[in-house]
Length: 272
Image (cartoon, rainbow, N blue to C red; front, side, top):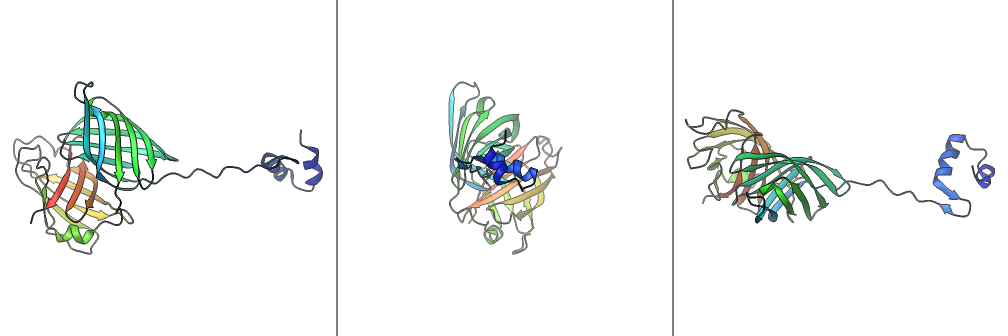
């Protein structure tokens, strides 16, 4: 029943408005009920430096395995995190609700997809870190933390363009990056890679473009793989690879690219 004090005090108001007031007021003696503000979602966009970790399992799904050089890139609901020295890359999508996130990831080991649709959930501490749980097996069974880079301003396009010759830090992924076709300050430039080695991309090359993401310490990257040497695993059956890139400090370039079946990602340094 509508309280008498409301009907006498607000009898001149339209019934629809009166109904809203009834919901907003507890009663004449209780005062106004303050409705909670709408929940805003945390924004995890940016580059996460290489001090992160994953605590997962070995291939037997029992033995503990800690990887301590995890770094990541996050943009528009896409998560890419990698350990260059351990040849692990996790690529997935997620949604945010308040400070919580959930989604799925695909695990690549040594450049090949080994698991997909791995449940992912966790917590965003905006401007600080992302922590979460992976619900797969082996290297996808455990927890992780990504540490937000303190200098997560715009990417240094001049740096990337100035350094025309990048070399892989651990030489397990694509052998080199040649940005000799790049021009600055144009927002899009070509990328060419090639070389030899013992990895599955030996003798392959690709051409594509990179473009800075406004307001983020990231680039979008899209390339097409071609001209792989005979006998190479068929990494160009799906030739289009997409991903994200970033820079760390003044001499490191981080790249993550996948085509859904293979991944070529890594950290690069300036060859002086």
